[in-house]
Amino acid sequence: MKNMITILAILSATSAFAQNGAAPAPGAAMTGAGKGNGPCKQVVQDCEAAGFVKGQAKEGTGLWRDCVDPLMQGKVNSKAKKALPTGANISSDVAACKAKRPNFGEKNPVE
Image (cartoon, rainbow, N blue to C red; front, side):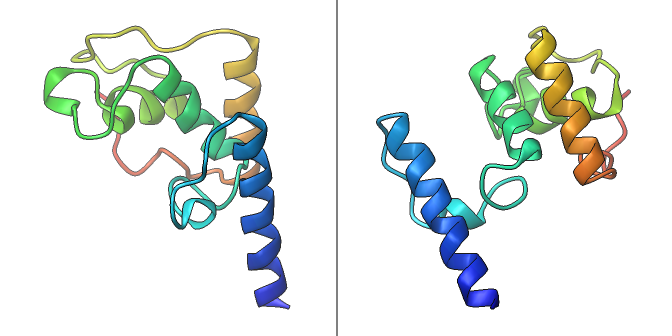
């Protein structure tokens, strides 16, 4: 049964990437924030679309420290150089993620 779930997750991710015209990265269905294309993964994608990049926390545009964690905690990182993404989609993505994974983005408290 576990293998079937894994296969379905991979097929789902592949289908989603194919609809966007992009090929999935190796192991894409099982990496990142959560598995597949769940609401927490969408929060990460919202931040990436707003220009936040993994590994750029020192520059104030870090994916996690400057965007994902603050969004999930309902705060703003005072050291961030970019504004957080806003809008109804962002709010619903955050709410859906919190409903599914209440502690997502809570590991590192934002100043």
